[in-house]
Length: 215
Ligand code: GDP
Image (cartoon, rainbow, N blue to C red; front, side, top):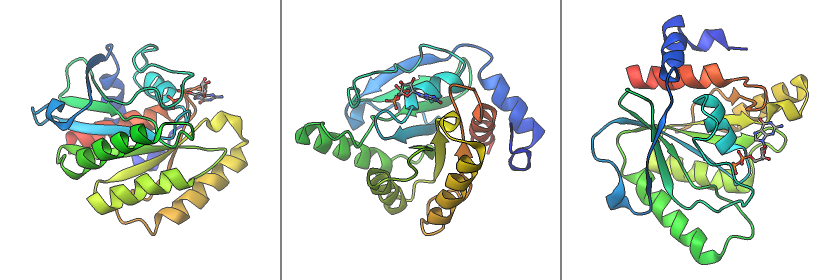
């Protein structure tokens, strides 16, 4: 189902066009000097390990194997860049955070890379911060939200795994999350709800990205 008020029919159509053909993996970046420098529009996906980020990216681009789903939370420590077939757009899969068992030096390396990336990336138009709809916003999410507020990078919360709770529960988590966002200056006020399992919310996400690409 689409929250039609949020999108124009043109954005929804453009969103569908973005995924007509398979996306490609471009590169994995471990240091700032590896970032692409062609000035293309960028959107990034962040979230705690196991939040369902890989599943969501795969469902969104309709291409099963694009982002690697993993049973080893915190394994991928790179910024992974993907692109659609022909548009000048990068989708950046950020390393999962908040994995309790991650070694301290790994966490520090991650934090330094992310902070530097967020602070110096004018082409980055929005970060989608994924939050498990069963849990709502947790302390590690607040850490990255604070970082995004400080670096003034626009971000939007996306609730994942919406199929795991009831429709009224999902509506309640969405409302509660939107209330919390009102005190975060860089946060987009509207929360998207999704289920990669059911495919719900994917057209909204595509339309959001298409609108950013057009703007
Ligand atoms: P990542 O670590 O954030 O990339 O998370 P994954 O995409 O690997 O997903 C973590 C686990 O959650 C996997 O077992 C997925 O099958 C499951 N999962 C992801 N998205 C959904 C969803 O929308 N619904 C349900 N029921 N399970 C999901």
